[in-house]
Image (cartoon, rainbow, N blue to C red; front, side, top):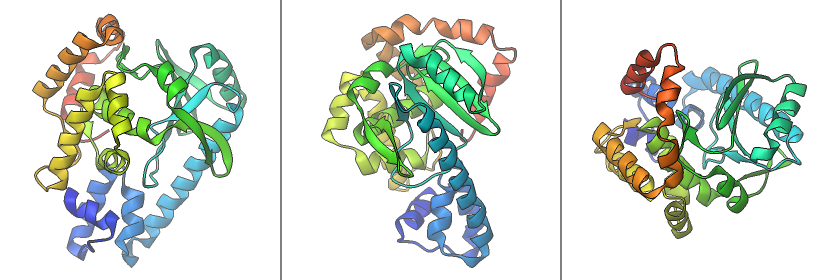
Amino acid sequence: MSLKLLNVIHGSYRPGEEELLQLAEVAKLNKLYLAFLRNVGNNALQHERAVEEARFKRYLNNVVAVVKVLKDLRHALYKFRRPVDHVSVDLDILIHVDDVPKAVARLKSIGFRAVVIEPYTVTLRRGDFIVDLYTHPAFAWIVYMDGQKLLEDYSEDIEVNGIPTRSLTRDAEVVVTAAHAAYKEHIVLLLDCLTINAWLSGKAVKMAEELMVREALDLTLHACRAIKKGAAEAPYKIPLPNIARLYLEKIAVDPNFRSTASNIMKYLVRRKHSARMVISRLTRRSY
């Protein structure tokens, strides 16, 4: 079904009525529902498409509101650029460590409130829209990439709905997509594969080596190739032995990862339902 969904999005396959609901579910799990609805060409799903297009419009309006108030701060949209439009309820932003207080104050001035404050992340919410401000990409308070280097060396000017802002380069998006899938989520989505397949380059590979995430890129590429061959389904859950090996390799080469790895115990202790959270991560189909 993953391969059929990819072919629908590429315009090379038109599903039958009996496949629509199953493919729609696969598309939702892989954050490709809007792209699926735009390419499936089925009148029975026109209402669904109208609803999803409205959600996408609200998402972009929220993004524009955020980037307007952050325009003169050192920041870059992170995990934002994709080769296909997709709907998200949150917006990830890399922010210079010295500009975090200003960014939080400005977002509060337009109706956001801070709901989570952690060592490398501040999460703010307005209605059902979430903004995550990152100084470094991290999970469980463990830093797996140098966010300040990404911000300084691998960001560029773009426009969102005609509004100028900063975002990671496409090469950088390939690298952070793979690293996020492997180190943090342990799941590879078709949206990840579309991004990597569209924008993978020699520059991206060198960047992955420089940022010490080459193993994550290779692991994610392996999953995407298996999906493209029809040998695996997406979302693709990376096997736990591969994750363990990935972490051990990362500890060996990355001093930031090594020095923050012990934070996971502090993170779990502060969570009321940490055991349930771990079980949920092990059993979930997507994120």
